[in-house]
Image (tube, rainbow, N blue to C red; front, side, top):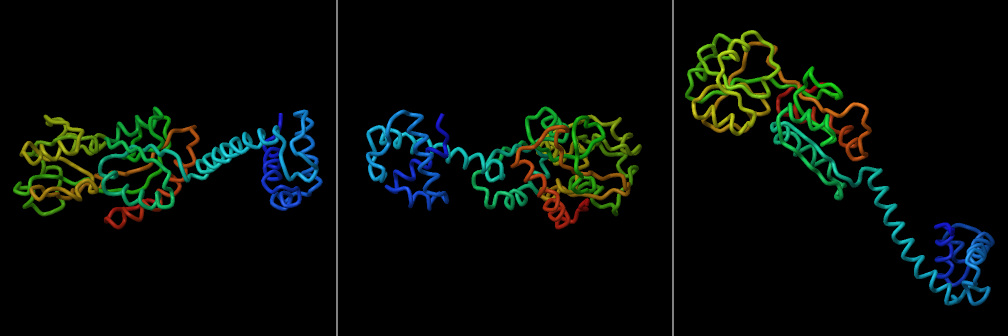
Length: 300
């Protein structure tokens, strides 16, 4: 077998028409190149150059040269692609995120991450926290951004920021005229529309509302439409209420436990791809900075 570096030496000598210039280009000695050429000729059993001056190729030399050019070109291109993947300059990043983070935080984070990475592809799934964790656990995505949960076996979570859960109601609702913050008894007469963001809220006052609830909606767009239609009120993280329509309003709750902690999930025991690891390592500082700009609490 003829090594790639031997073929590269042969191509340089043939291209320069002499050993000295090729040796200078390859940072090798002329004698080392001469030995390499002899080894190729011995391996093939035929001469590659018409004379010892290496100024012109034999027919076999031309045949080897033409094929070596193609082989080295393809090899160099392949190695460039491999290096780009290894250094996170290319590749596919598969993400899952809750809608509020996907809409309000990820665009700024990805803008910075993709600067200088024109060959990186992003595949983003916008879904609720339960589904985000499932997608990470089953390996369908590399990383997930969702509310933290104690029920996430096999996953590693890195906390990023906290935002309070707010009551979302119609702007003409009596709740909108009450002083903040609201207590749970203030909501006793309201129909609570449940959603994924409230699934793990343990407050006894809230659980009493859950027992009387008639609705559970997972899609945020549908949830907001239900509230607009006057079917009830709901709780949403502050980040999810930034762009509410003017017909809706928000009220704070007095219960200090009404918080969502958002974190980054990855699968335990799995080595991330270089591009996913680069995104993960840079996400924390960027997410905390953006969260604080929005008035939320970043977690170090």
